[in-house]
Each structure stands twice: as structure tokens, then as C-alpha cells.
Length: 335
Image (cartoon, rainbow, N blue to C red; front, side, top):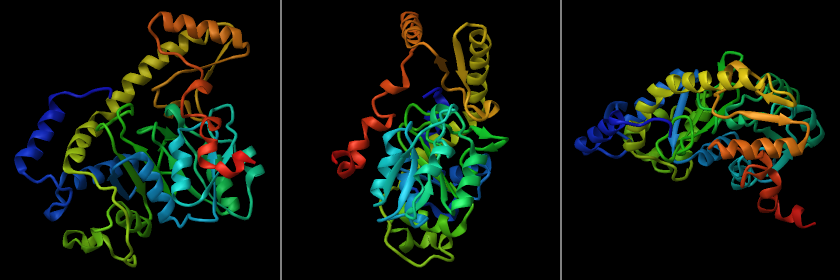
């Protein structure tokens, strides 16, 4: 977590003193309700739901859009395991697609992976770097695919002036401890589709269809059983304060990255990876690309010696496909 102080403590204290910890409060005036409206306004979507994790945000989006057994979903080779795991939890099959030079999903390779069973694509904005959403959306329209954006590591980022998460039919975010803004654990799912919102709200809480306070939510959807992804007012209260901090946090990260970028751009033998939209980069990471692996190794060792965390993306424990492929596709991996 980048920043937390007495403002979050005061927000939690008010919740405790109210003795109303459950997320449903009369008049839609609870902390979670208020955060959801404020987050939608920030991102530019009509609806938001705060829930228990980024993985569950993806799962809710997949299930709400009708993804299930027999379906295939395109996912990038460079992503946290939860992206593919959510597809498996929905009963569908994740199909791994190579990434391009921006570290986002490659539309060129995605065309090689299309089958009659392909129903969705999940572009991932890894390490705060925006994927090419113009290319992804054009590709999805051509093949009639659902776009579910994985913005777990890119809260507040944008592509061509539009916030990440507002491009697809569904956007999913993580509020884990190492994200741009956080309450320790949690997630958010967004959409501008009313029917999807109702289904996802039911999915995050199987009892919400019976709650008289939430009758206004369900205008169009038939009743069905959901799951248990609900959070308490504590998460909502903390996240309202964190959301107020978001733009300032991103501004400071971008200032620092700009200094590093200008300095390193003068170095020989190194190229910077800035994603598909440098202006919308969250600047929470800096990727250096070397032609010579030996030089890359030497530079990383020197950075570590100076107290700067540096690692090859391929060495990250759960962020490259070959580290989790056997878990999500055990039959294919064994063949």
C-alpha cells in the first residue's frame, strides 16, 4: 500500500461507532454503496460492485456474460495466475496467447488461437501498463467475443484518455495490498450494462435477491442463486479514502518514472517498455529490455546491490504461463 494514515483510521472508527458493519444500509448510504458510485464516476462506467477479491471480480464478469463449460477464453501468457484460474472456475478453458512488445496480449497471435468455441478475451494491463484496447476491441468485434478487462494491477490507468476497465463489457480490479490503492484484500467489478450489473450483484451475494434493501437493484434479471463474495463496510470506508488518494499517488509515481525514463533512455543497449499508451501508464513499474541476456543479468544485479528491486519477468513466481499451465489445463499439459 502506497499511503495510509489517520484518514483511513478515522473512516474505520466511524464504521465501528455506527455499529453498522454489514454492507447493506438503508437508503443506499452505506460506505460500500457510496464507494461504488464514486468509483464508477472516476472510471467512467455506470455500475461498480466492490467484492472480496480481484479473482472473484473476474469470475463474476465471466459468469454474468454467460461464459461456462465448453467455452474457450483467450488469456495472455504474461499475467497473474488468477486470470486463467477465474476462467477455469467458471468451467471454461483458458487458451494462452503470446504477448507483444508492449507486454499486452498479442492480437496477431490471438487470431491463431480462435476456434468456434472461443467466446471471450481477457486483455491484462500488467504492471500498470495499458494493453492496446483499440486493437483488442476491434478484434473482439470481428469475432463476436466478450471483452473482460483485467485491471488488477492498473487501477486509474488509461488508454487514449479513457480509463482502463471502461473499454470492455466488464472491468475487474484487485484491492490487494500491493495495488495502487488497497484495503488489504478485495476487488471491484464494473460495467455499463444494466443486465450484467444485476447478474454480477447477485453473483457477489446469493442472498441479495431476498434483501428488501436491494430490491431496486433487480429491475430486469430473473432470480437465480449467486455466490458469497460480499465485503463489509470496513472495506468500503477504507476504499473511499484510498480513492481520494488515487490521482495523487499516480501523479507522484509518474513523476518518478519520468525521471528514470529520461535518464535510462540515454543508456546504450537498453530499451524501455512503456505499454500501448505511455500517457496512461500507472508508472508503478519500469521495464527495461536488453538485447544481451548477460547485460540484463549484470544490470539487475547492480540494481539489487543499490537496494532497487529488479527481476526478470520470467522469474516471477506466478505471472508467466509455464508456471501454472499444468494447474489450469492438467489434461493437455500431461499429453
